[in-house]
Image (cartoon, rainbow, N blue to C red):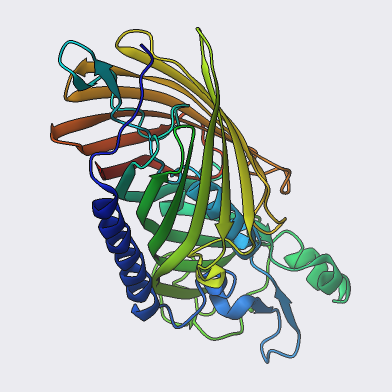
Length: 428
């Protein structure tokens, strides 16, 4: 007999729990709104290093002064879009239908089927079932380690010390003396994201369920930047250096030990608040011998502060096609979706391929490969590929605890060596 799903409580109980879920969502929103945020918009922190530009002079009285944007500021203009892509590596929590029940004629009751507890990061085709309510909470921590393959703890950028326009306006002797000089900028950056989701899902029919998830985020950025002028051939005049706040007049070392050859800046900023709201619908439209199919649509409402990197800048719609099937204890799954976003947030093709396996009635193990292909953004952060392993535990009743760990398989984009996710879910 085919599996059917039953609710674990009466309609009155379900109504009470729906009220509780609404209270949790409202409380989380109030927490996020009340939490203090950065005095400076996080999106501007790195571009505003050194006051937004570096000023150098080649004359003793500062009469001739060149200004230009440091290369590190240009590179980090893409940080919001890169973070939006990184945030996608934490899929919105979804109801995986951990528990299914079939009628046992001999026992004259519904009996829980022997199936896995579901994947950690992916969707599977079966829905919750009519009248079933789940509530959940998840937490993800990402301590980013690299950006476009470069180590965040020791970023180095080089550019000509003087722009061609400025250099051509100077006497020929100065063009010869300073034409080969280099402006080197260094940034030692610590960048962390803590992402919390509160979510609830409800089965409208046996084939359709809906859910809502609210994100609450904490982002912290801490860094120290140093800019210095280098004369590789050693043919420059003695008077050449920075003319701006933060300049080092009494430093140490072969470069900064010389007055006006180095300038420094630093920051320590963070922001906490509500992220975006995610509205999700799922339809299990076909079940065949070899695969079950579902369509999922997720609409993202940009309630997070995009200037503080807490959410997307514009609404997003992400349709997904889900295929999965249980073959004994093993349940493979394939998810394919596309996030339609604004150019500022970067639209993105997304896919997840993996399987979960029932080790025991109370333990499920899972493994996945996740991929994200961005629309072109200056030929950077085009492909992000991750591997993931995880588990789910059912210690009692319909309570589920899970954890997953993601590892990078390439270095494109904004990446963490490990992305940690923990989750809890209860089904009524």
